[in-house]
Image (cartoon, rainbow, N blue to C red; front, side):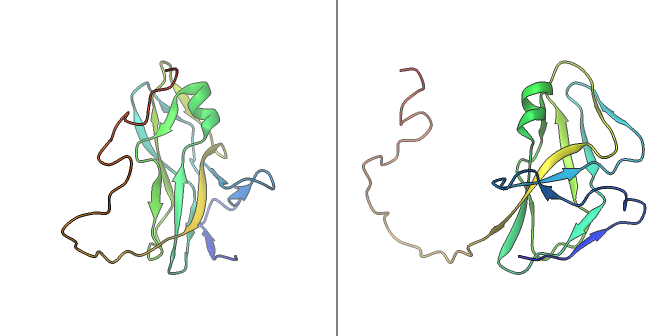
Length: 149
């Protein structure tokens, strides 16, 4: 699938989103900050990527956190995953949050998130008086068992 991407002026030095490996589902997004941004513990910031994209109808892009940043530094996203709709043409940004115990610095060009492009399904609701039965039924949080017994 080929998609239009616009790299904002002043950010042409940054790599376009790309897959790190042949089996990767997400493309790395890079920080388009002009100077280092430091996130204090508990702080959240919108980090620009310097790109805009055009998705066709029937598709979305999900902005997802990077697992390595989460594991090593406690860096996540407040709205994970973030959704980019097919009719949005504004700048792609990443809403990072520092859930760690120390400050975290974001430098120009750092890989800060992943972008996954996926098809969407449009739903038309069919109002019914009852739902079909299942073995699980109404069992919710924790109803299928807890890890470790």
